[in-house]
Length: 300
Length: 178
Image 1 (cartoon, rainbow over the protein chains, first blue to last red):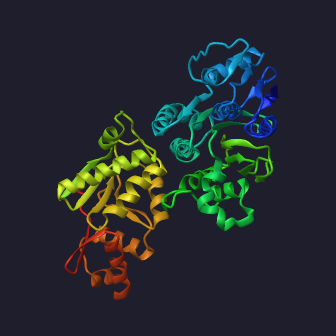
Image 2: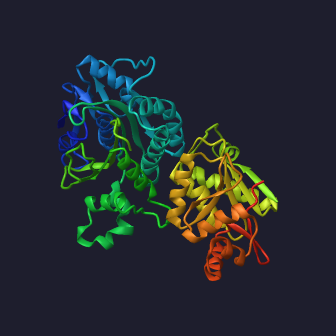
Image 3: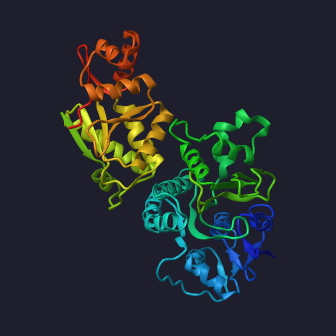
């Protein structure tokens, strides 16, 4: 039997739950076919979410899933330019014509879909991002110059969470685009995802007890993002997310983390998201999205 | 005697690559270990850590290289930072404040160090005063700032405990930076 899961036409953090619901219980027993033929647009979060699903199925030793590529040529070209097909080829049996990846000149893709397996990969990601980040953050989004370094720090810390806590590898992608529907401004989006143990299991042995019956995916996210706790006893740990939260607040940025069946967001005034969504369809590992919007002209 | 340690060189040795970004905990641990080895071999009392070749310091490395170094060696050495940019300050200040630690940092355009991290307001004021006046005793500080001797004594003891001034006899000296 093959379970067919339709990739949403507009695939981002909002439609991700519909996608996750398609899998049912993890890991699904049937062979999986991800049908992206009708997909018209995918955010970096959506793209690396697809890869995470493929990775989780491989790690659960399930049959290699099938992926039918979008029929829209423009969408396919973007996915190729973002490096998606290059990474997906190992995880999926691809069906449909895949264009070759071509990049010429400056692109809105600040960082291709990139695997994060070890600390060396984090060095590579930070090195690669620095030039393009300055061009977009300062040049296009109107952020102060030092924002580029804070941005790189945020990226570094988010990627390190995979290496240190996930227990497996993950993915990162960074892109600039115009956030028409929700904001009407340019944004830079960092998306980081892994197929690992998730926040609840990572923190369970050290923090579940004090939460008692409240302990779950939502409480674990709250402990990590709001209270800055870590599974390590080392008092220097757990500062990365706190720092990211602080500077996002200055820039009216947004961070949301989905893990297991919950998603916790620090919601800026321009967004209508709820801070905590619980009882969502289960999905492996953790998915982080950081959005930094173009600054308006008011003084800060 | 001062031992100047170029963090950029140690980073290149630690990661065996021409990176200029001080990121990730394993890298931070490797760099800190090399700093400790260099200090153990040098016989110097003051370590001047030069960050001028470093592009980015993330929080993990600020914690591993600076905070944990202070926690490890602060009974044996005086540590001063130099070559820091404004954004380096931010990461280092953040982690040191978290640990209730402080370090002296020499700005690029001055030889008078400033403090990063957490000390009491009185200790911070006393540090700035010593930086301007040079070596002084408890009574000198009390006179200079219009404080009681007890208050001056406590502020100087705080600085001495955090290895932010050097004590010789009854006098408190600003840290050597050159």
